[in-house]
Length: 252
Length: 247
Image 1 (tube, rainbow over the protein chains, first blue to last red):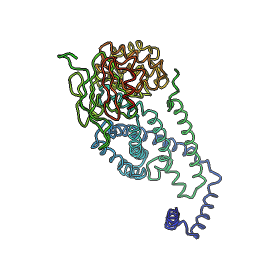
Image 2 (cartoon, rainbow over the protein chains, first blue to last red):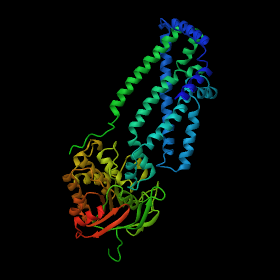
Image 3 (cartoon, rainbow over the protein chains, first blue to last red):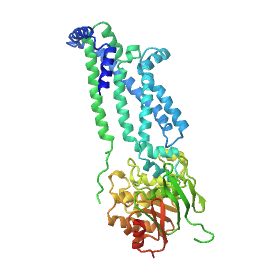
Image 4 (tube, helix red, strand yellow):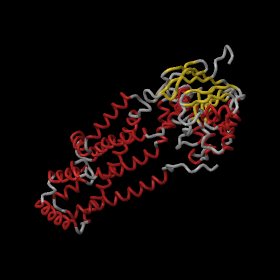
């Protein structure tokens, strides 16, 4: 325990968080920043609104493309269906994709397809592929092995096993993952504009550079409102589609 | 067994261990004939489930052979298994997110065309047969319900329906009535008796003595992975079986 505390203190010193002079300066700067945020200036809300819609579109299309690519790869990474050489290769590929941050993918696609939401969408798609691929194959691996064995016993093929066991049994998890990824991607898409890949981030970065923190706060509040709405809608969708995790007691 | 017809199941000298040096089955042999219910008795951990999985080909023995209808059973981790051997695991292995009818229809997957089945387009004849099986099992009116909404006894019937959908020659059932009350267990075993009477060889793993007396045509008793009793016919007394279990 003492070693852990010592390690933490050492780390804090190395990253500069035990430098009292710097901390005082930071507090002063934060106060100036906070004062500049209020009151929020709503004058650019129409522009921000249009950019927010673009942000949601980037997140939606990116999540959909990422899922479409991740699902078959996750099945290929499933040990119930394929041997270690295939599952290992696919897991390695997904790990490589996942290592690259979304913003870096955005830079890559800005170079490839130019500025705008197309680059952001492709960046979000690839980022989603890495994470959804991993989370999906872990969901498939979590399917009750007894159910897999029972249906394998009927003499079905691997594709049929995926279609009739893995996908239905993992349906709850897949839906939850998709909703989570979409929510996450709305936030991630809001900074795609920092590198010219579309969405509200372009404006947010501009307001920071112009020291217009009041406009920045308007943009952040709009993002927050959208995230809350998406969160509510996700909760509604979950309630509508997800089946209970535990079965009701047998009514003999 | 007749000279020209091999037994439905013939397992010889089966050895199996999940970890080196700790065999859970030690030289177990088992024969099951058509029209008979063979009960495999043993306390938890005696090797009953492993024996059934070896017979199905879900596991491969380290030593020994399994033959079904005269042909060798080859264990396969990912390739297709023989649909003429049906297997009902202890907790039934039903797909929770599928309906009752769909669960039964999975029993036909071994013989239907692959591509249409992936689009969930199964032949009308298979749909009709699944519906008939559900009617016969007394749950025809539950065809569209999700299995998680069924009672324990109804779920057993769905699992039996899926097994029958395979048109099996051998049915392996692993303690599949252990969680039911006595009356429901008897109902289910009566259904199994009917299946055996139609020419199917049935092997039921159980630890419930009272089912043996009523339904078993043959009994083997496992203890610590070894067969300690193997009797045909109903001559064997419950007392002798109990003794074999406890010794």
